[in-house]
Image 1 (tube, rainbow over the protein chains, first blue to last red):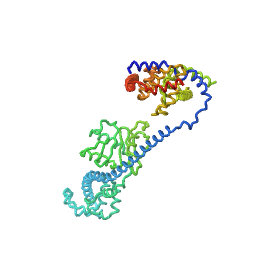
Image 2: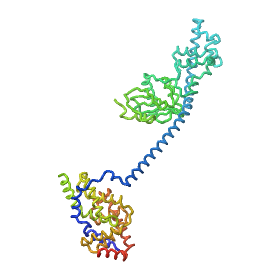
Image 3: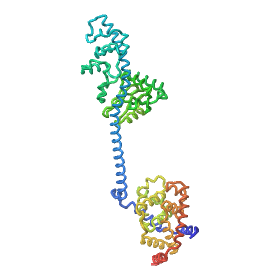
Image 4: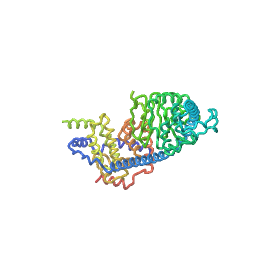
Length: 330
Length: 182
């Protein structure tokens, strides 16, 4: 059979009159309005039922498994966060401890100076301090000559308080209370670790309030420092500061060990401690310090008025809401 | 009054579509369904949705699509039913078509039925119903180049199929002739 034959067949089919004449069809059309309408339930046939059921099962399975995966990953993340909180607090403490000890040594020197001065003026003061055993101030530079056993912690703290020296993470009052609960601590200052209680129980955060007045200062200093260290290209960028086991991260970029102490010091100056469940969101318009505790967010904010809603208790959700344009009401 | 106007408009719009639509339906329904049933089903559903068809000139496009959808949902891989092929032959005979022509047409429809769905539709619309490439592209929701390819490939495949079965078997011919003469 050649191509011409197929064309011939097509031509025959084309010329052939239709099976049903036009008159028949038009007659039928006239009867359509009188035909009863198809009941709604007859629109459901086996085909549509199978298709709908299959689709529903597929979607629900997909949703179920995606939820399971999310919950599993969240559980893993939580357990990791818990372990991180131990590590992170320890590592932050190592950083802050060194700073604290530096301050403390200076403070010790100053306080002993003051104690000596006070003693010369009035020898009846401060019975707990056996200043008689501290010979000269110069000897204090030599660590061997320091005899801290004769200086009680309370005294040092009082002196620090008088000198208005701030201890990085715990306030003087908090240290006092810690000390009061454990009178046995009266002894070596060198053995005293102000982070001990928190390290043992990382879930207890002594300092849960942030001074909002300090937020503008923190914002400015952080922006300046980040720009200086070139972690950001411009101060108008949206920045997320988070603390992890690896250290401090800026927009998921890790801060180098050299710079880490600068940031820890900067934040500690404003009595902001770093935690694994704390993040700082800032740009040149606002700063938000957010804590998450048992899935509940608590925020301290300064700057533009913000309107944001939490669809869930995830950091991503908060971050998205904060930095989204329509979240700001100018 | 409303019904009468609608009916009048529908009949007017259908008038221009009849030949092309019926040829397509004949090729589509051959051996699987009574073409009259198919046409009536499509006409009823089209009539009820007539107001929703914005461009009345494209009524034929809507009807072709409806017929095709109906064929897909109803027949799928159904084998040809002899009674229906006989009915087809009888109807054509009553229209004054010669037995030879009926045989040719039936042979053509059988071969067309063995083509892939899209190629068959394109070929039937182009060669039998007389649609342009552009119109077929609109009906199939593709472009003219794709339709040309389908038509070309359909022709080639049809030619091959016809070579494989150069002639209808004698028994088939005799049966068809018997149907027509009786």
